[in-house]
Image 1 (cartoon, rainbow, N blue to C red):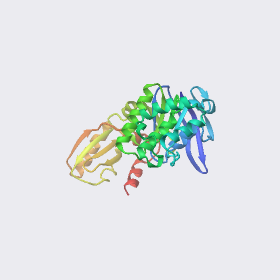
Image 2: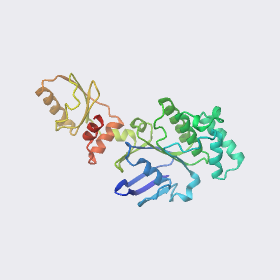
Image 3: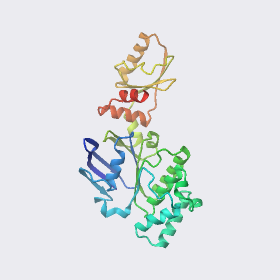
Length: 310
């Protein structure tokens, strides 16, 4: 349903996206997950035809390019780009007119969408008077007015409150249950858990694509949680067996390269420093997976974490 091969985009000397390849099957929810500046927005815009790639190809619904499937594609941009001085319903009507939909069709679809997004009681409210979560729902409502088969969302839950995020995901699940294929970018690793498929992107490169469970299985027994009576974020940074160490205030999460040799090395290290500790195997999160895969691609996760802590 959504496929791209070797998409690349340069902005001057910056390579925003580098040879990105991705396939999202029909009826799936795929999360494009990565930190700010990873290339998510550029990739989404190339997929929907707003940016022309320097190289690479895009197929939507089996058709090469985006122009032929324009009406089958719904796109919700990252920033709120609606008319602030128009009401909720007026915004929908304006954008529906761009697709030359007749009034009866717009009325029927708008009523259904506004009910689904819980905006029906607010049709007369000006867009600029909506909360952040309600603005995102309005943007989604407009993206749905053509009843697209494919929905591309660029960080739709960024900066909204937890309750609005929950509502938004319930809407996405409802749309997906009706057969809609959804590709959604997000900087939130916890949202990756909610997708059928996850594409992890870092520094413009897609480093892995798989289900959340399959991605987490790649870590195997490499994660350890250690509780020790020392509060030093750099405690394990000099230990060669440890690929990454994150300090959470009352415990450390360690990523070891070799789970067989790593545990004895850590135990010897603790004995050398006369530290007693509780060591248990940890259940990996998507953030753990991202750090591991990013580092395997040459990114220094430890340096990144240290920089964020300063």
